[in-house]
Image (cartoon, rainbow, N blue to C red; front, side, top):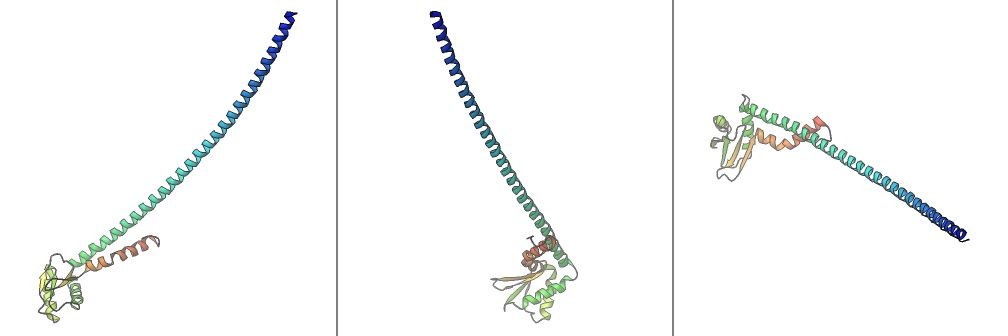
Length: 196
């Protein structure tokens, strides 16, 4: 009988162990399933975050590339305008060295003499000092001294005898007063309304 009792007890213990083992396995399976579900969610969230970051970086790179392209286009437009304006300067130099310049110089001198002070001095390009003296003498300003001024090559200037002010009237000074407006017009004509 003892043997039967021991067998019964052993079976009961074994059944209890099997039941506990089955419960432990079910709990472990539930924990593993929950862990897998959480890991899957985290993985999906991580992929989604990474994709958002990739998209953000791609947008930023596109925006930066657009800004750089716009800056390069603006620089190119400015370089073209600079080249054109430089060619105008070169053309003014060519005119100042040409045979028609004395007549232009007289017109510039005529304009200046309308605002000349009583005791004025005329500054003129060294090569045209005598021409300026002749014009002044022929136009009622014979007493006005003409001083050679090497820095003036394409126009004339007047100053008072005390040299407290000077007014210059030259091709280049006239052009440089209008240069910003000329640049805008050049950019607009070459590249359209948005250029400037």
